[in-house]
Image 1 (cartoon, helix red, strand yellow):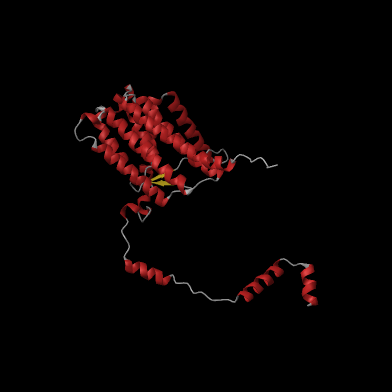
Image 2 (cartoon, rainbow, N blue to C red):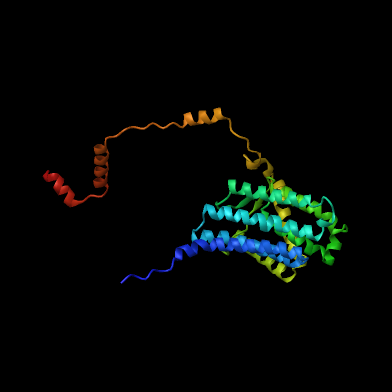
Length: 303
């Protein structure tokens, strides 16, 4: 009788993080569809939903130890759609399609988001991180997507007397520059109640979530804008501009062939041939020394 095969649980666990990543892609595509239909409120919620999925896929991959190079590349490609193309097209359908060359702002924003993701893969992809090199694309995408929400409230007229579509190019260009800049942004704090830093991070994150859920139009954009401004001001205030990461992949140059040959000559390895019998003898002696066996010792003494 043939044994009953158990379900491939390992494969299901491996596919779980990629499922969250594809859910992020679903929200990004649907945001573009909703923006084309003129429903910018739903489009903004879709970008926020993509941000939640993007935060969960990495945490699930680390918790289940199923991270892979494939997952890293898939996550970056999806982020380019959800936080690059989708927010840009929300702004395009909202106002930029009414002017001849205004669509170039969408190109600049998407190009910077793609370069930001490519640099992230080279520098930080797959590693645990406490800071991001440049404004993370999810934060930039959600900030841009919720900008339209904030402009439709009465509170916007109190803080800015300029028309929102006039300020929009400055917002897009600022976010684009920060994504490819050397400004360091803190990663999302870990939820913890065991230390002061964890408690403060948990309280701030919970307060932000509650405020966005209660009054999304009024508080979503200011909260996200506070994160954008915090990283920039913190970098300038603490003088971190003098200790910025070096070797930016955006400015890399091809290495000279002569330099590569010199490096190869320095890395030469010398091989020493060892007879097979001697190698096995040493291994056996080392094994016996590390793990003494009374029976083997008696045999060797009788020989």
